[in-house]
Image (cartoon, rainbow, N blue to C red; front, top):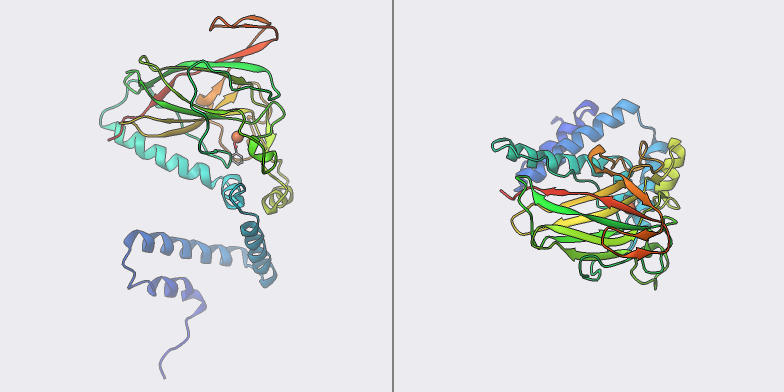
Length: 299
Ligand code: BEZ
Ligand code: FE
């Protein structure tokens, strides 16, 4: 009689063998590895039927929590460090491409995009103030965008967004809340940028869903250190998605999504009320944050 059953030890290989007719080699490679590691995990922890069902229910609840404004699966990836691992692989590829022609200046490190980017922020002139009525200490951001040879990148699109001084993004303030603390700028002919916003506060990632439950069960806090999100795009250069982290923020050493890079920690210099570097006179204390971005030329 023909051997019909698949031995328990051969299950992973049997699944992989069934992909023999797949026409997509990369898909086959990714799925083969995934199946191998999933089966190894199940054997490693000797997964019970109740634990398996709990995992299915957790993933189902994660999916049900997703809509246009909430992406619980990305949050799951972020809090398990997977998003940062993918960011790291992509940057390492760029670094490897540069090895043949080593850069004069180290490229700015990338970090997670996060769920709070909102397409369509207003395009404003350099130096504009996007604080509006938002809470938080005013902060002046300025610096230069160059490539890794030090050549200024003129006309670079710089998207910026952050939560307010209490740690809340506009997207978290209800379905009708207007855009706040986000804008798009373009660097000048020398690659300079500047704008006014706030010194961002630390805040918890959304923890009222399945991922929050997971974090609590892991004994973890949900907080991210204060940061300004930035996204830089310029023709002939790799797009850069990164943050500027506030140097004395709590949780720099335990970011819930593992996004902190030492090179992205910026000193927010506190100033008393008075004249700012751009000549503006403020009647309240303000901060100044200086950061130069280095973009990798496209190959
Ligand atoms: C954020 O920085 O906006 C963020 C990143 C990952 C998960 C949640 C929030
Ligand atoms: Fe953020």
